[in-house]
Structure formats: structure tokens, C-alpha cells
Image 1 (cartoon, one colour):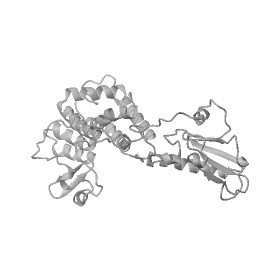
Image 2 (cartoon, one colour; image 1 turned 180 degrees about the vertical axis):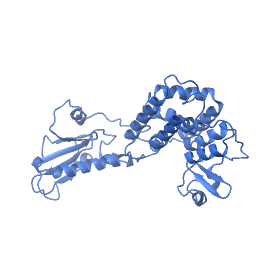
Image 3 (tube, rainbow, N blue to C red; image 1 turned 90 degrees about the vertical axis):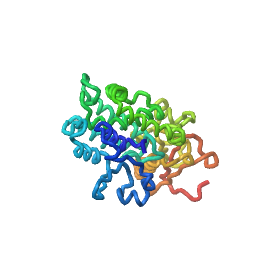
Length: 344
């Protein structure tokens, strides 16, 4: 599976140390039926790759663990990858903790992506973490690698993921998301180091296959975008039109309805429509924002100062037959009097 950035980290070490195939054979999980097959899960119950099987029936999962095993076992072959360099280890750790855990936002069909429930939040965090790593790189670094003239674990860890990022950021409209020092290193090392160039070609070959199969055609922010025109709500959120705002955070905007159908009538809307012109446009991509909208509606319905009493009706009108007038999903929170059923 050359498209795996984590597997590519291990291959980089094999290539740089010139460990022959007879010594360490690189094989696809498909040889055992795939990641989810009983045969593969017997070796790695997590069902993930990479995995190193060694003599004695021991299996070592996780790319960082495999790399450190290879560095120790083949310490006398090729570069040592600066195993005790604090900056190298820090960059590798930041990469593993804060980038690979959310990299699924670049290619998976739906959230969650690590701790993030929306793709946009995960992509923003990825750019933040790249900037943090970029700040660790010396302005006048002497050599082709992140820590200078010697290749390190930081290079092996970060480079394959940067191939993903370089290829995929533009699909999401992120044109300048790689900071300058990282971009200089990434472009330089693949031009000047044949092993890095080999890994680059392996990964991009896999990514090109994904592209041909339409991997991103149905992924939000890549193949799918919100192409409907802005509405009145966008002007309210931007402050271009006054509103009696009762709640606002980074995701949700709530205000009183100018044509109330009850003594207490609040509208709760997502700040970023995310294609939700109506509820029938929802998908797993919207689970977090839909939850936030309902939690906010429930909190507001408990607020006596807004006119609510013992309960509220929480309604989403979807489409013309339901009376929806604005193509931006909104939750009605009505209360302050007894409400009959069924509604009109």
C-alpha cells in the first residue's frame, strides 16, 4: 500500500540504510486478505498498517515503533537518523500526535477526524501544527534536512505526510497552507535525495490512483461545496443587518424572530451553512453542527428571561411544503404559552 504515509516512513529508513529486500521484505496487507482480514488481525488486532513481523512470531505495529526497532537493529548500517537529537524527536512527536491523528480530514468521507467533528476545524488545526513545526526549523539551516546536514527521524516521519498535504490541500482550496521553511525543505529534499524522491513517487502514484477513482468527488469542501447563494442570515451573522442576538459562539448564532409565532420565538442557525440549505441536505459531515444547534436550542428553551416557561417546541421546517422560507437551515424555538398539537 504505497499510498500509506506511515508505511512510507518505514520504507524511507529501509532505503536510506540500504537494507535489502531479502533482509526485510516489503509486502502489501492484501497478501493476507487486507487490513480487516482475520489473518491480518491475528498479527495486528487494530487492523491498521504498517506492521513488522520478525523472527520468533513477534509482530510490531505502529510506524514509530517499527522505525525505532529498525534504527536499533541496523544501527551499523547507513545513517543513524539522529535518535538522540531533541529537535528531531520533537518534530516527529508533534507530527504523530497532532497531524497524523487528524490527517483523515484530507481523504476520509466523513468526520470525526481525531478530536474534531468538522473537516474545516481539522484542516485549520493541521495548518496551525505545520506552522508550529515550521517555527522549530532554523532560518539558516545548513543542509538538506530538517536538522541540518544529517537525515533524521523528523525527516522520515514528516516527509511522507507532506506528500499528502502538498497534493491534497489545494483540493480543499488551501493554496498557501505549507509554511515557507517547510516548503523549502520539502521541495529541496525530494530533488536532492534519491530515496526521498523514490518515496515521493511511490506515494503520488497511489494518490493518482485515488484521484482517478474519484476519491474526492463526494468529499465535502473538495468535490462537494456550498454553491447556493447567500441569504439574509449571512447578512445577520456579518452584522450588516441588525438582530436581537441572544446567543453566539464560533459555530452558532441565535436571535429573536422578527415575526414571532409565540411569546418566545428564537431562531438558531449555523454560522457556516456547510451546504445545509435544508435538513434533507444533511450528511455525516454535519453531525457535530446539528448536535450543537439542538443543544443550544435546549439551553435557550430553559431561559425564563427570554420568555420560556415549562417547555418549548423545537422545530425545523424543511422545504416549501413545511413552510421553510430561507435556504439556510434554522431551528425554531417557540414557547411562553401552551402550544397545541398537531400544528397547523
